[in-house]
Image (tube, rainbow, N blue to C red):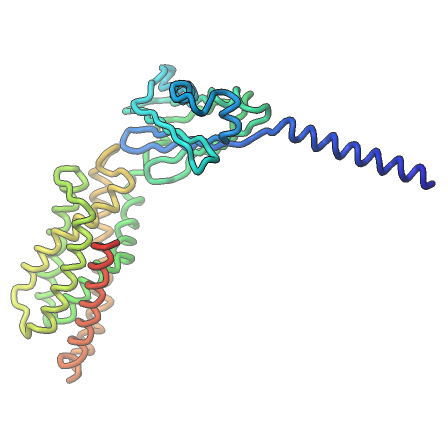
Length: 343
């Protein structure tokens, strides 16, 4: 019985060793292939284990590495091979070999992406491929192997959704969660005394930001966010201080118009981040996004103004509530200004 058990134990141990040797002898390996489409450019980036790459070429041979990258991907547009307009590579923390290629694609029916490098890697190598479009939506997720090394996708799937319903809620969301824009609006509402006054302020702000939003989205005028964001913070500081130190705010719609031009550039950044104005139709997204901003803005006014006017009837409103509220607005503006300048 003891001999039988010992024989079984040695057999199990032997099988375990053989299995381990087999696993290490066939280190399958994994890599990723990330494809992003924006501004009519298809960017393909990938990373591979340096251990696998150095089995193919010397990591010290720059020419061989450049040649490897150039012949790692084949991109076909409607059956025609497209060469990359840009190609670069690098080493990440001494562990992975990374590269990126950029292809210019204006219009197509079918796009085929073939991974050539995968056939040169260890047997059983798996490459995880992800395809995203300009609005960051994942439209394809595949696992490529040496036997299944390509994927074909319709060009239309790469084009972001430009429907009216897509950008309307995006505009509403941008104003409702754009706390700097909301605080600017709140500071204006603090001293409003009549419906005609608030109508002028809202209208002037709408007209102003619509102008710069359109100009920036259409790439007619470009202003760096590093300049726009601090200016938005300064607009909040200015209105807050004016509420504190100036008893009467006559003609404030003119001030609102001026600052509205600045805020419009801030709104435009939300559209530009997903490629509107660069790679696809702009009129409908611009219209629906701007309408969404106005809906959100009017909703805030309708919610806040009745509360403020109710409080306005109290004797403490002008003497305490407005100065304290304006001081909070000013401090928030100062915080954002410092943050946006230094960080």
